[in-house]
Length: 76
Image 1 (cartoon, rainbow, N blue to C red):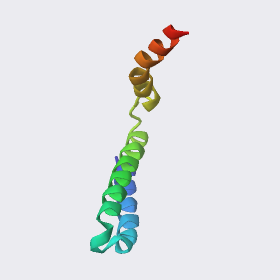
Image 2 (image 1 turned 60 degrees about the vertical axis):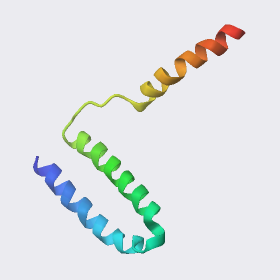
Image 3 (image 1 turned 30 degrees about the vertical axis):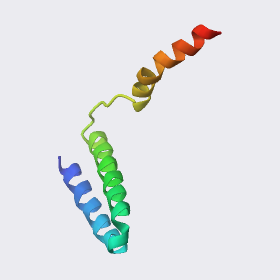
């Protein structure tokens, strides 16, 4: 748990350093993407630190495209 706290403090420090570059009215979308990527990265790193097993995103892609793949395979 201490490792997670240290990681979050370091991540917040990096975020504070990067945020001045994203100030301004025209960079609203950039900020949304920036925060979305940061949250995803923090979640992935947090799961790694806490040793939580997370299934591969490739499995979700396979579930989505399997019906389409079967349809195309039936044509040939």
